[in-house]
Image 1 (cartoon, helix red, strand yellow):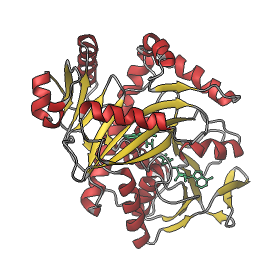
Image 2 (cartoon, rainbow, N blue to C red):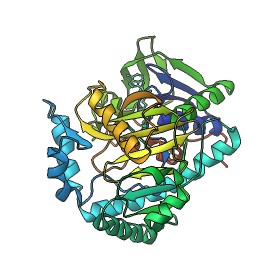
Image 3 (cartoon, protein in one colour):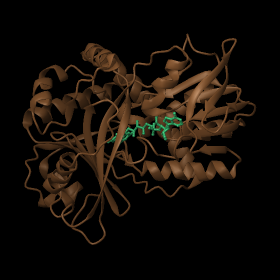
Image 4 (cartoon, helix red, strand yellow):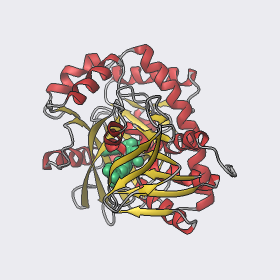
Length: 409
Ligand SMILES: Cc1cc2nc3c(=O)[nH]c(=O)nc-3n(C[C@H](O)[C@H](O)[C@H](O)COP(=O)(O)OP(=O)(O)OC[C@H]3O[C@@H](n4cnc5c(N)ncnc54)[C@H](O)[C@@H]3O)c2cc1C
């Protein structure tokens, strides 16, 4: 079967990888290049144990402060766009304990499958992607927040999550000596030894290189502009470089997936959730962590990728505005300096922004749609967890497309 994968982010490339291994003929289309979207500069965390959706019951209490504080990691700029309002409404409706718990359970299972798929690929292909398995520390400033995190840890253990432990400030410093210089209060942390990190951009370009050697046809710099449907099937996509026909199509266009869905009469519950990162070149600078760190109060994550430190955070509902305000970059630099004094002051800082393709519940959209063409499969909506979940979702897509000769490990 000839499968055309639309989008060369981590969702599209992990899917292309498994489909090619299944024995399909694969074409990958992207308007720019591999990892040009949200996969390019994300937080680099393979966050298999931290899949709890943003939509949770705690949001009701914290929402006023999140909306009103000028230093808040959350920002909403109301748009004349019914999609934004519908998304926000569905998000609030999902902010209850029952929905959050059910979603967490499903995402933990998907994350475990994704981990297996990613690690099998990495062992096979030996991609140079600054992979590390140094664990994660989620830091808490106050005793109340730390107690809440311990409750969540117990709940996740019940749902079959990975081994985690609550650690004191002294244990935190022993696990990550780079935190010794911080003047910030740390009441304690949740430590997850099995958490990993890698450079998602390098994973994407590495997959592209591997797939090219195996005959996958890459149509980069090629923008999808429309579709051609016949008799309940998708025949081709129109692009600015001509039509591309295939037997089946996978939509992995990230936050832009809504456009293609609209062409086939489907309204996807998807909205761009903008975030930012900075990448610090650590050559010759002060102490930087080896363990992945989450500053829970600031909602900022830190990942060591080779000689660089990736610092990422913020969630903004501001439509498609891809600008990078200096103030947001300063906030990330301040967060880095607060925990690791000296690391941002002298290092080269690379600012970046990306749009998380977010669903209100936090669950990705994977599979056919009952109103869509039978040969159209979606693989999108991974929100804040696209890197973490990519190989799990890709596996679900490959299971939907009959394989001539399955070769999965
Ligand atoms: C600040 C930030 C931090 C994050 N941190 C993490 C993290 O630590 N761990 C984690 O697991 N996830 C994280 N994420 C989420 C993760 O990055 C995303 O979920 C993931 O990258 C989505 O991948 P994707 O392939 O679906 O979309 P994308 O990477 O956005 O890829 C979509 C592709 O489609 C292409 N495209 C769009 N329109 C068209 C068109 N018309 N024609 C052709 N091509 C088109 C684009 O060029 C792009 O390459 C973070 C996201 C952000 C923004």
